[in-house]
Length: 328
Ligand code: GRG
Image (cartoon, rainbow, N blue to C red; front, side, top):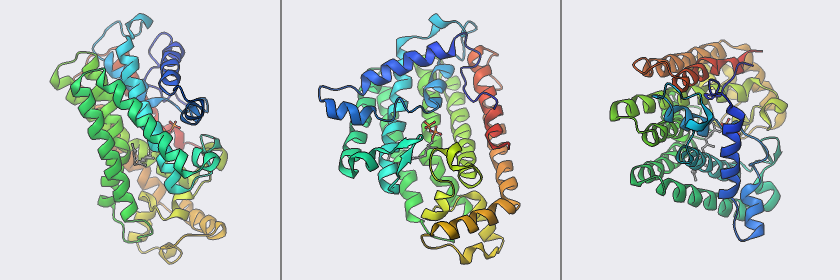
């Protein structure tokens, strides 16, 4: 698969991510061994680390020598760790809400230690994120705090329309803007701020991040319908089962497809697979891919005024390659 990381034009992207990894582990380490174990659980399980990678690429977006290892500062790494910790904390809480059994191909925190521990450890990760953000200045601290609020708003919007077969596209787009796109926008914005870019560049980077995040979530939602359990690291078709009707499904229902008769309630695995097969056969997967492409194009347009540095090239390629995850 084509590379999704915006660090692909850096000389040693693996070394960059190792610095992020070390700082991430340090941030999840406390005096209490049990809390350290729970808070660190999902870190070695992987994850693409796209959000810290965008912080770094955006921070280097004006640097013609931004491919060189030594251009990566501790502040950039800290910004990256702060956004990854927010992402991780939100995954802990999301898995509690979904009663998830697996995440990143391993046992989910809530399943292993129970909901109370998962919620507390998620809170702890958010607290650590806030501490790191504050060390980067009040603007970054305020931005990350507002972003955590947007994640909650997006998630509440989704929850309010669970099992609702009348959920429409506008409501879907509003929810994914909050729950996913805002954190990508903030990752790029923090990069711009830490990298010392002026306001107009910081705004262009933010616009890129938001449009990329919209495309990312549309793709993620399509993958939930078309990918295998192994590819996802969790059961496929879970959104359908749990009543989260995403873009292809919303379009099918709006087009009068009889799939609506199966939905509106929690599905057993047999009905879930039947509904999933119907979505895969319909044209709405292709029209939803076209919508993701429209957001990719929007993301690329946001970068046109920026110089052709390794950081900008990486962001551009990451957006261009996003849809390759759907090739099969
Ligand atoms: C407490 C911050 C906080 C939020 C509470 C639970 C919640 C509100 C929001 C959840 C939002 C959520 C789970 C959005 C989905 C984000 C998403 C696309 C996750 C998958 O991201 P990847 O593919 O995962 O980048 P990896 O594992 O690669 O990091």
